[in-house]
Figure 1 (cartoon, one colour):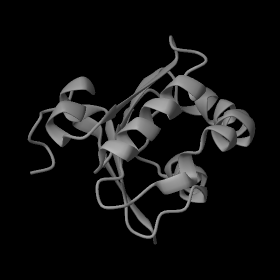
Figure 2: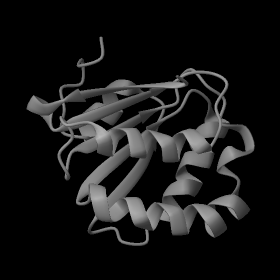
Figure 3: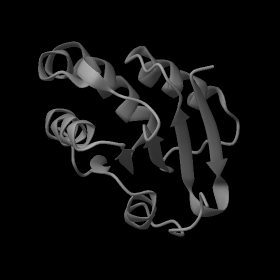
Figure 4: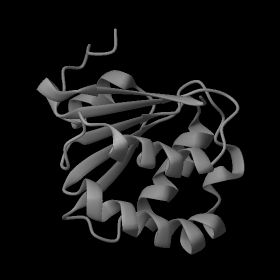
Length: 134
């Protein structure tokens, strides 16, 4: 599996760790797998961990603003309200993560995204212990 899902119920947090090579379809299958997990509760915050992959053109503006927006709206209804931290490994991917935030955060009171290059910063923003993944 190109990703691993770990749920920390005591912190109301889902950690989705992606492994190379990354494909945008993992985002959607990851949500489907999450919804099938009996430990998931709507409203848990989500850490999408891309720290070991190159997202490349998977977060291309055209793709995000067309097909991704429609698909993500469906998932927002099943995860909100929550925060989603996008943890990246490079400045390029960080910029793409910020681009994803701008395109996909159409309902900021329900789902809010933020890109990070540090696990500690992402976890703090998600109201989880900054050393949770150590």
